[in-house]
Length: 194
Image (tube, rainbow, N blue to C red; front, side):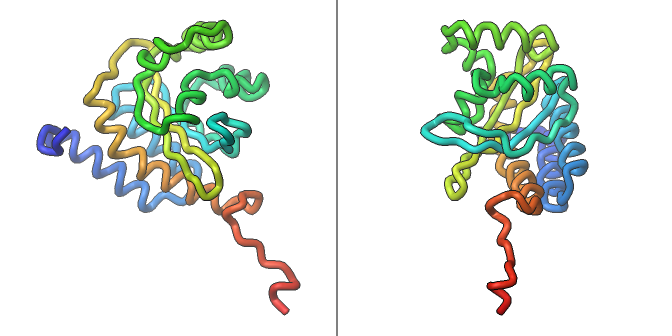
């Protein structure tokens, strides 16, 4: 899609999100950016996270920044490790490109995926769009998801996501890098100071 095909209002929103990511240094700031992107994409819910991947599978969740996904769903998702069967996460662990959920769901023919899709829909997470950015240095992937109760997403939304995801991912990684448990943080030991 040519940038000239976006309206002036769309371009302003894209630039506001990009500018916001350049100034973003805390999880609450990223939450606000996610909610801005959510409104721009006409979604009802927004979330992002970073996870460890190995052999095309998510092995561990490093961090989740919840824009406004239902807390009950998110608590269940984490406690039951539903990210292991989440078809969206499984798809992005293999292919980090923007995808409409309906396209991902068409490929899900296993019982665990069908049950997951049904349970997510019960929480209002029926339709959506997601994008991922693979970070090979630490074998991690950042995933950004926007969901809605109604089917509002199309190829235009995919093009917008293709533009903003890289910037949102940079903000996510910068926030996580500040966490001393993350491998990207260089640790200074007494031995290295001597």
